[in-house]
Length: 127
Image (cartoon, rainbow, N blue to C red; front, side, top):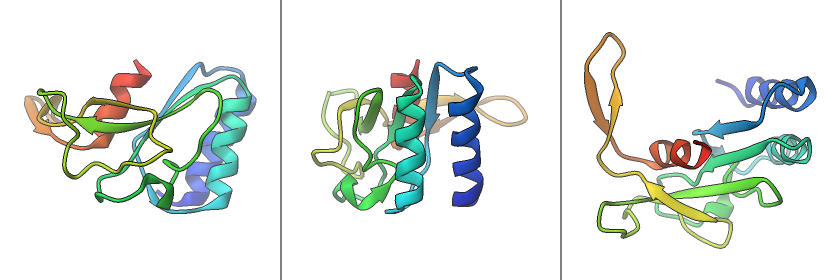
């Protein structure tokens, strides 16, 4: 979706008082409007898990991974040997690593598929 659609969803979640946890397995270039919407969501008391990104770069270069603050957890991907995945973004905005290599997931239409990425790691933190 578009950044405007993502921001609208974050604003709804912040204002609705119906959310306790949000997982954002998405990313793009640094964007101040997204940054502000994530901060507002966290300030509303929602715990937010953010995928760090899969470009092997500093997560401070991408949104929403670069957002820091109370209730905000940026998640890198680790493997079964507790090593950081080579594709995972890194840096001081990353708070924690979670399983993100070879994660089994349900497949649309039935069955199981295996994926790797910080988008698989962040939901582990969101719970």
